[in-house]
Length: 175
Image (cartoon, rainbow, N blue to C red):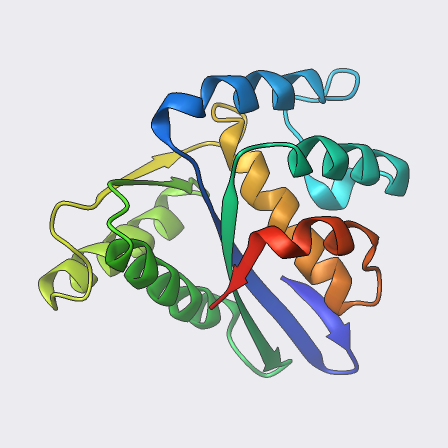
């Protein structure tokens, strides 16, 4: 989530699609990009120069991405917007026959709400029952950093800072 302008906010979620057999190399590359004692890469914490370096490395990875964006007023509820975005993303991933979705763990309360959404989508037949959803902390799964990089490039682009998006944008499908 990021304030866009005035009283509008942008909420975006990304999914990075990778074949299971190619995951090891991107994980290693991302681990090598950590700065100092940092345990992870997080787009908003990186300098502009580091964001560009990260962008260039990610641009060479065999991936594609989907991003859901919602622009909502200050009076809107971020959690409600997140659920709408996650709903849209999960339904699309299910239609594309994705087998496993790794969702970044937040905290027990928020994760429980996300799990309830996944269960509700399965129950309504909007998501395949066989779609496996896992929750992992970003410090434990470097591939989650890819989604953060891609969604960060989109949100920064919407805020007028499009250098990274110019490079990564062709790999992103907007939903």
